View 1: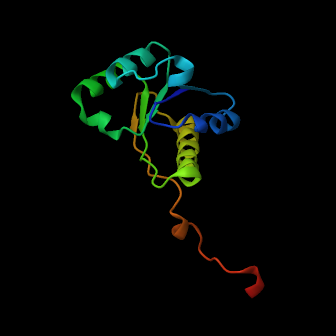
View 2 (view 1 turned 180 degrees about the vertical axis):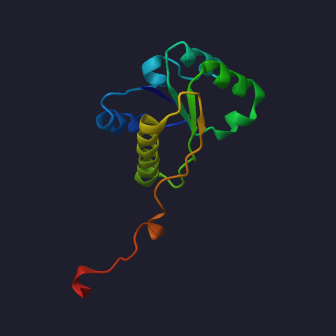
Length: 139
């Protein structure tokens, strides 16, 4: 499968995706020379590049009639991720985890007809991540 990651996603997530999903292609605005391309022309352009899945955090695309028409015309799956909160490595890790789960699911379960997916954010805030945190010395 060919996945296109929208410009709103960090290119830093490409290498982990490529490392885990070796049989898939992962494209982005840098590799495809599409930096700064507006949504409707972008969606039309990626349709010409045999992209199977378009991934973005711009979930509003499904509410804009011109963008919906471009998505439908492109005949690929559309994934609208939730924007991860926070910053730095935590944000990158949550985005990466959501992408890994989403790509794995779509790779194994994608319907033949183009489908819109809105995955829930993966991971938790640090205070929700662990069921227990205790010093080793207290064990």
